[in-house]
Image (cartoon, rainbow, N blue to C red):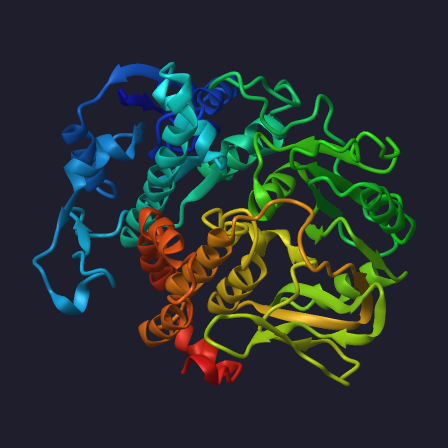
Length: 522
């Protein structure tokens, strides 16, 4: 990929409103659709020239930032950038990954004040991998895409590790967000690059065509307007994910719609249903988006978050019944600035007597154990049940959403709850809100058993101390699905994720286990 010189203000390097141009680096990976962002920036007066810079010249400019740095930025991908700035350190057992690989450091010894980083990612890694491979043997495309997606996820985390080492907080922009809501996403970038500049995005289209390949990315021909405030509530979006839920989907959506103000946005994510359940919805009840391909819980929920517009994001399974007043109670708990995630008390649809107030881990296999409580006030819990959980959008996005490395189903609620606690953000159960959930003996769709085990291993490896990880592995290694699950784990980006989380969170996994007295892993 060539390096395109980008200036961040005015025409041909000129300043806007008398301010000096801000140097910035637009970082990406191949196939991420950077041309969409570049075209939008150009249309807003951000000059993108086609001059090609060698990487060593770019590094010289980065090292010079804060002194005599040029007023420009550069578009680059990790494969071009890494050889010039990253090198391994001398082997040191105390500074190695858990698998023995040495850490690396950048040749940029000092922080980079004054330089702004924009990281463009694409959530749908398999589609991105297919786009980068081009036309090949159709029979091998799916296998190639699955292999390539792991490498692309790893590259995203390497960029974040680089930013962390440079002590710079990047702005992370998703290609899917550009497609779903071009105006809002470009406005975020412009505000980040030039907070004081007056940039109009009214001329931009409300949605853009996919410029990477022929895949239909999650988007709507006419996205719904931003929800208005009503009944003392902030703007709220409810995201319901569905895959072949049958009549339960319409019952859930209709029931939720009956319990919230009309101003609340309802988004249904159709994760490749084939039973006609989505088509049976009342068109006035919800806005429907479809995932690029079967995304599972994490992929579909992240797609729904990208398409939603609210400041509060509520994620609901497609087989729940909520009692009136639940939304007001959850939003009231989120008014506490220390709280990032809230959830209701949960009962079973067919057995409403038992009530769960969040859950914890009681054994090394990380199986959930419901918590019982008589405390009527909102109270902190290790984990909020994934069947129904609400987030302040800013916290959800700061955590990167649900971990995209979790595959199909399992551990997504525990992983994001643990991540938020490590960031110093609380998860709270609100007993005044109650939701009944249909707990099924088995999912009505295929969930490969080794993926469930993989998700457990990934959550433990990314977050927990080594002694706890060893305990989790020992408790699972007798399972026939363990070899396939562990192979999936080591082929992914879990070590990079572990490293970045260690540097960007305020607490470690040991703190979390002590905070909630989870003795099974101590």
